[in-house]
Length: 338
Image 1 (cartoon, rainbow, N blue to C red):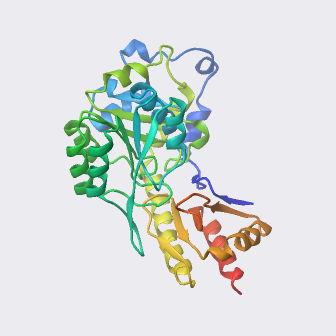
Image 2 (cartoon, rainbow, N blue to C red):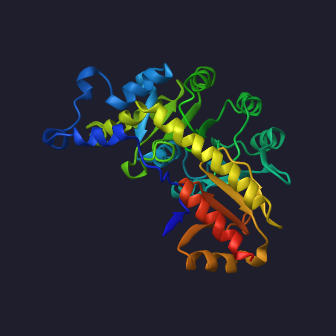
Image 3 (cartoon, one colour):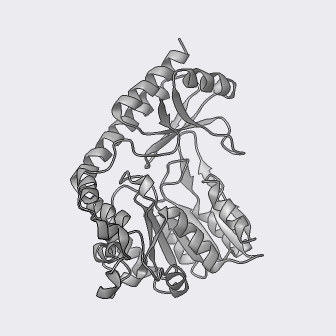
């Protein structure tokens, strides 16, 4: 079975990650982390703080980036408040707002024949009218795959300084340390959420992190864990950070295969393949073939995401798998038309 519906990384983690697991001893599993003896929350938060040139207290760890989203909502929103989210986005954003009884305000994107783009004018207009307390911006955005350019992001952040902004970068490739440090220095109300699940292929380790602006001391305190974090997950994540060449090679293969998808599926009549900066692509297809194509692929043991949302209801989201898996998916979809 080829399962390319959850945006996982099928190349797997770097060899150093397995070495880290092999080096875990009996006591490492039996006792709490002793990182507090160094005056830090954890080994991983200390490393990330050094990588991004920020204070260690500005790094919070979580159960994937998912927990960073939840912690932000729980720390800053209550019943009756508003969370501002993209209309083309992960459904889970709205779900966590519902959990604390707050409402959702949606902002759209410009949809052209070939891409999705953030619209600063519309965004700012909605913000000034609705005055949400927290804003989510995703880059790359799931499922559309588009990123927000620096000029648009800066223009938006300059206008929404009264709100807490969570910049969801779960799908970003690499650390982008200098760029990230600049954002945190300039905008003290921003949280940058990242994860080891996607790029680093550590989804089952469930470890993500948030880089928190200096004004957001409530979140830093809210996320504090008295007895520390998952030591084993931390050591594997540290090994991943020590393996940049391995992940750069994988990223290059994914980029090459995205180009292959653009070329091969883009040539099919009625298909639009949107450019993506993530490890997935969004494909618009004719409505009438949605169910027949899904059945055809399942018969060949291929699972991809058939979107079933209000705005994206005749679209495929295909995770970029290994080069062999991608070739099989392209081959099967082309066979559907023969």
